[in-house]
Image 1 (cartoon, rainbow, N blue to C red):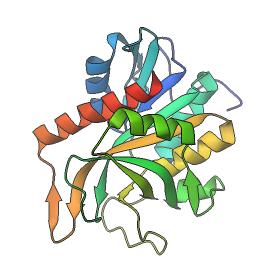
Image 2: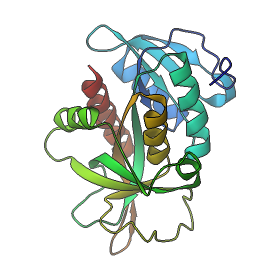
Image 3: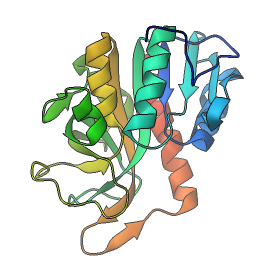
Length: 227
């Protein structure tokens, strides 16, 4: 970023550690549940963000990225330009892998770059998360969380099977972009996801109350990894 931020317009200080939900509503929920006295960091373009004190008393920011790699790339680039140094995507995902249930947490060690944004940024077929931050996410998530490879794609509907996606635990829309930008910008990035959709024998979608509960567990795991 060669100029000041264009799409993020800070109204409060930015912390160097940031949680990145896609959904602005989830950003508000996580800020209210994880931070003390959160103050709105950004509301420009509907990309809500908040900064407050985390459980250790130090600042943490929760900033929505919007949906998909292009929006996430803009937000991440501007956050890093403002001083973010450790970033964790906290989002939802779908899975076709057996043994994974609705509401389960999945920690990404790497993302298959099946999206256009990460490839436009020069990503190889697979792009890795920061190993130390990933290990911290595994510890914070505890027993029952799944860890492995995920697939990043551009499409929520009508997505076609990716030729390199065999063995991927989940599919989502932003992680490969985050991991690739972290490599390019010299910062640390991780990703933890809650399973909102399962497609094995038939399509199952998580209920709203169960999704809210999973999002809270998701946020606690991510925040714990950054303490």
